[in-house]
Amino acid sequence: MSDTIETGAAAPPDIADDVLVRRHAALQRRLAVEERHLRVPGSEDDALDLKMKIAIPGLTWLLKLSGLWNTARANATKLHLRHLEWRVPGLPADLDGFTILHVSDLHYPRKNNGYAEAVEALLDGVEADLAVFTGDYRYGHLGETDHVPRHLASLLSRIRTQHGAYGILGNHDTHDMAEPLRSTGLRLLINEGTEVEVGGTRLWLAGSDDPHSMKADDFGAALQGSEPGDFVVALVHTPELAHQAAAAGARLYFCGHTHGGQVCVPGWGPIETNCRMPRKYLHGEWEHDGMLGLTTAGLGTTDVPVRLNCPAEAHRITLRRA
Ligand SMILES: [Fe+2]
Image 1 (cartoon, rainbow, N blue to C red):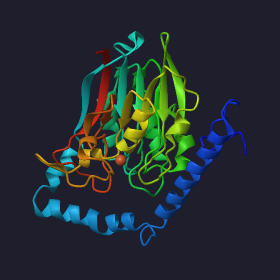
Image 2: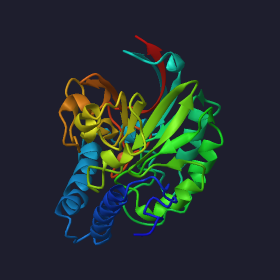
Image 3: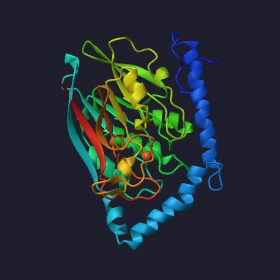
């Protein structure tokens, strides 16, 4: 097998062959799903076909008939930056006060309607030690994506970080977007991890590929190179690897994908969960076996460009010693 693998980066010589094989297998799983998406409509992907033919038109008409369409469309353009402070048990002293900007599900539409500019206005000049992007940069599953790196590069130029911006792919992103995304300055992690040195503390960013529809995750491969004692931060598109990441010793877990439901019923939450996890993981802050997690509603929308009782959001989290 070549030293240059699907991640697009030259593999360090100390990476075990079995990890290269596993990353290659994960890529093959992703490419097989991407191929099926290309066949929609009338695809072999029954779930996606059903969604496009029934769920999307059904929700559109439901909102229009109920008179909520215009409100829901307007809600989708109102973006929020939320500030959180997390008390983290056993947080290394070097990370006390460390700040992380979490952005997810940008879903840049091909026909820009002012959304990209609204995202830039929201995050213009925001300072954080680290920025993490948890996937879904494009709208929909199909079509041209050349506008995506253009918008993302412009956004990244407005964010101020000490240690850079890191990202993963979502279930709407295709593998051929990896290099254009990297060209923006985003450090893309596809079943791989990297060290971030903070004072004398090693923070390990473990970036998984999408476990939901791509089934391309290999969290173990994302830990390759980490060392005992590292403060491991998991970046996963969905909350579906929470158990696995916590068992592997991750301390923090950032994800999106669910959009918080996009359309929610007060007191109940999302109508559609789009996630194989209990409802507590679908939106907001949660804890799993001592690991702190955040499922953001994200900034964008997809399928139907609306939000109801589920505002668009990004987060800036400050870590504090418990
Ligand atoms: Fe998404």
